[in-house]
Amino acid sequence: MKGRARKASALVAVFIVMLVAGCEPQEPPSVRQSRAIAAENIELRKQVEQLNRKIERLKEQYEKETKKQEKLLAQCQQDKEAWKKKAQQNIRSQVEPVLDAVMDETAKLREENTKLKAQIEQLRKAADK
Image (cartoon, rainbow, N blue to C red; front, side, top):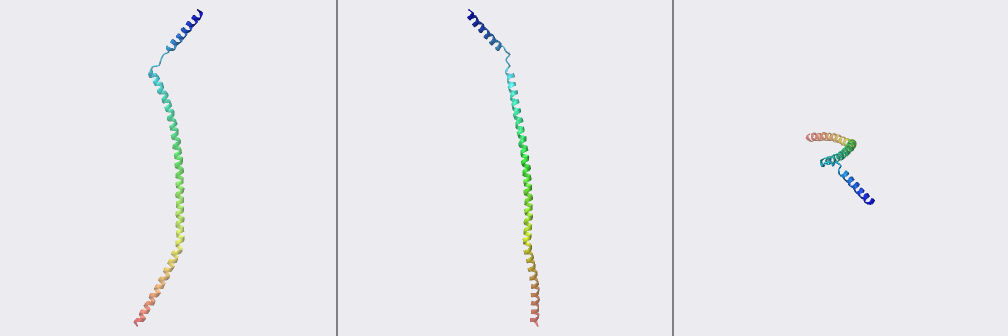
């Protein structure tokens, strides 16, 4: 009989535990849904914050790279101007001797032309006499 009493007491204890567990107030679905939405919102806010930080890092990276490229462009433009000036000076130094030679030759030819005109005039006068 003691064995049966123990079994009965154990069954009663299990039954009472089940009743107590089942008697806990259940949350209505709207409260559970609200908590799930709130948890999801928290997670989404974290993701948004992470993405915003990433965007800021990318902006900083972009600005840094842009400044680097602008500096490189300015250097290239300076180099281009220096090469342009050097080329002009090179051309000038190569053309000046040729130009001087041409000018000298032109002056000599004009002088010779003047002498020849004078000789022609003398020959005409001599031929007319």
